[in-house]
Image (cartoon, rainbow, N blue to C red):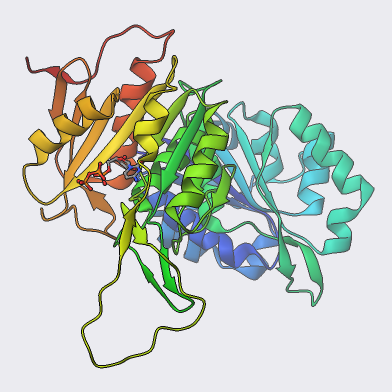
Length: 409
Ligand code: CTP
């Protein structure tokens, strides 16, 4: 999701995690948002306003009583213009002021005047985080609609090990995206599979494919943003599990089949993005296969087709499949759509520039069971995920059946 046309106010209160807030601002600006940074006096002791100003490309607000700032920025204008407000880091002190309505500097004044959705990313020492006052204050803010991201556990700058570390900047931005996204998939349970499977040959080798999992993870992330409850069944990937998504890690096609079938019963939408291995070695050896110098034949047996089996228990669910091809993309995708009795198939030719395995973009051809088709240009995998989910949202049982795709025959 791009943030073009959106104004995000980032409040920075004083803690060592201020340096990570720079990344939050950078990521928001890169997503197209107009980012207005408001810093407390303590925050300015950790990071200079110039750093944020440079990253945001916008003036930074620091002082309610600075005549130039107040006439040019204005604390009420800041509050009114915000589509979302994120506080990163949110210190125990800032949280307490917010919970009790104290407005004794620019940031707290803006927060009191604002009506935009609020995301808090707390960061503090573990004992402060666990203090009942902090927890009670947060509970009050949550009851008033604020969303909290993090803190994470790990090594803290104060020398302690425990919970209190600022959430990963990408997760803070994800939460901002979530509060801003339309909730057209609310109440849906979306099951997504992603990544490759690995089929063991012996304890050190396996058969697999080049899938990175990025497409499926993008679908899971975007579906959650749009209000769905998401289960992601993932083969081995190098990706971080998306926040707020129930992620089930599997290795083989058989494990994937079991995990997908288990989650299927409660799913209303199933999107099989995984590149499931069609074959596995008949026997996985207990010991390492030794080199003999002679040709070697591996005997393979077929894995079950998960999607085909799901289609026999489809009910009112929407079933979406993928077809990664190197030739005859459209005819192969149409064949698989009919063969597996899918509602939508997402075909892509992996030899086309912009659609290579592991990349951040994809070039897909969408075909649905009502003969609507659309060939999309090179898009980021997130944008492709948005388009697939636009189709899903338009085809939910309760939705008007107006496909966003064009009818071809
Ligand atoms: N799929 C599946 N189980 C399998 C293989 C594939 O559920 N054992 C799903 C994939 O997740 C994808 C769709 O089926 O959504 C099509 O996968 P693909 O590998 O392109 O199709 P196959 O039917 O295996 O055909 P091909 O001969 O082209 O590999």
